[in-house]
Length: 326
Image (tube, rainbow, N blue to C red; front, side, top):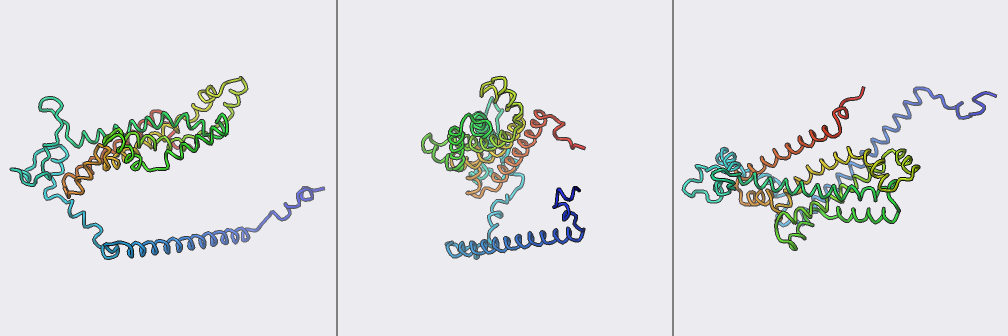
């Protein structure tokens, strides 16, 4: 008896290069066809939605489309040096003797700390925004870490607890931060506290999902060893699971911090405090120098947070994790 007799399929296994090439070509052609059909459907949906918008828009969508970027002309300052002056609360010659009103009243926003030493207004507002994002992220991490182990299929103490925990996290991230902030602003009044609660609750739900997906992919051999020696559930989490997931948890937490800085800025526009409210007022009033100063400060802050996150991640995970493996 030969090997071919015991495995009949092996007789038909060898294929010529031409047959393999033909099969590959057919598969590629089929994928391209499906991609083309998908693009046509997407284009048809886009055209239909634009027509619907044009028919139901009081200002006529297509008629106003050429003026989409007209507002940029309102934000171009007459004197580009005013952007620097607005950023550091320096007096502007364009607003001398009361000319220009609020558009050039840069020194009025100074926050005096001691004597003549002051913090520029926009820097103080940016610090408030960063504090809201930082506190919200800490709250999110503190609650998301234990919830993730309750929600993970491989680590949850029981199915009812896992299902209830997942539903709670889904509820927390179901509503945008700005909606939650509006609700708590009505209850707690306008200010950073409402923003912290709103961003913090959403962060718990978002990080909880990311965390429990990481937990579900851990190596279960350490957990099996802990079970074998009679370890409790909390001991298995502490000594078998947590060391494996901490680097990923930290990466997701730092990413969420960057997201929360932007979210805190948006929430500021609805009364959450910080730089968002001032940015909204500057844009609505057409104050070009102030708007550009705020955008520049926000942009530089996002870059700084991103660089700090990358540096901290390297310190915690180790430089070797970022090197190419050969």
